[in-house]
Image (spheres, rainbow, N blue to C red):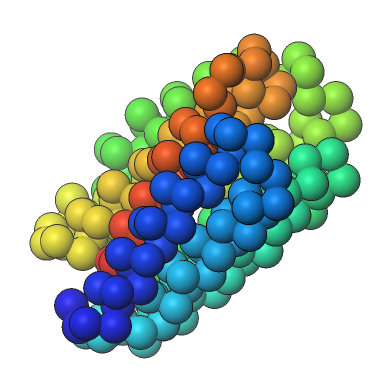
Amino acid sequence: MRAVPIVLVSSALVSAALAIIFERKSRRLLFVVFKPLTTFLIVLAALAAPAPVPPAYKLFILAGLVCSLAGDVALLFPERGFVPGLAAFLAAQILYILAFKPASGRPAFVGLLLPFLIYGLLMFRILAPRLGALRLPVFVYVSAISVMAWLAAARFVDAGGLKPLLACAGAILFLISDSILAFDRFGKRIGPAQALILGTYFPAQVLIALSI
């Protein structure tokens, strides 16, 4: 990795730690600054990364990170911004799916789908009673992120190597982060929810960016 991406990733990790600290200390203004700043730095790191991968992969990952940044901004306003944030992150999952999907003629390892399918269905079953009008959008989102994580895992199993491993780890962390967010919002409140959500979400995005 070149010097510029290293500096940007390091800065993103510092910014992520500050965002978590300021959220825990209820320093709202600083949290509002550092949360989107972290994702913005991750976008820059992905943009600056040398790319010995198909150009389309880098394009899809970058576009997914930008959509995630939009989602981060929307979720700074949990009530008004939840649905726009959900839409932005759904777009990010679709873009990551396009990045991780196998090349033409190389089907994804279907055997790996089952654990992600079971996980997604169980999560939706837990959330469904409190979703109300959001039941369909959340079902679509849970389906999309489960498929995204499956394709990232299948890509690693098929190709091996460091960068597919980073993408796989990032995708699974993303799934964990969103599961905590959903359970905290629609299930049972979790005390340090934001710390857990951001503590998995930011590393997830860093790992996905580093997979370029």
